[in-house]
Image (cartoon, rainbow, N blue to C red; front, side):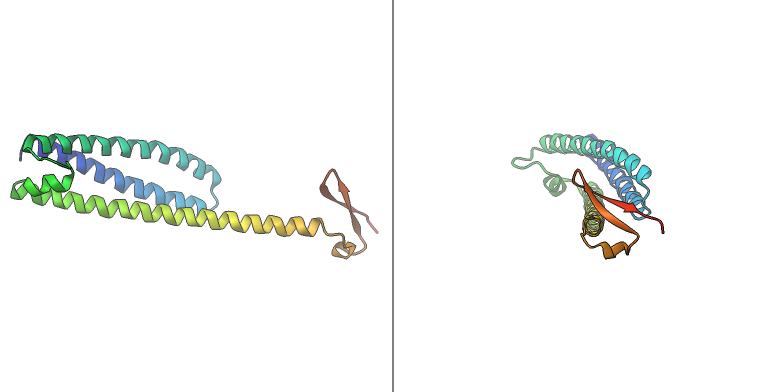
Length: 167
């Protein structure tokens, strides 16, 4: 294994590990959303943003190493991993293909998990908005029968207030 290809494989291995950790973090974020752990969700959001930056740095480093390995091999045109795989000797090619396939699978899994989290948060927000709208409608109702004869509504500065009277 040449030094350049070895460095590419090592960096791709680090990227694969990073995607695995990122997937676990996204799944933990989902658990925080489901369990309404707002404190954990805030902490997780910060951790995810930092880790996304780390994944981007590792990905950029892998791209630089792939370009350098393609230059070393005299590859013209697009200098992608697929181009490097085509000219790599058999044992290196197998390792690169395995890493490429694993990274694609992990990145798809992370993307799917993020999409599920996004949909979950959007649904939660929509439900919350509907609930708030329902309660706002009830409180702004002009019918005193909502609370029987025990109270009445008063409008003050655009905000509904309930005045209760004891019998």
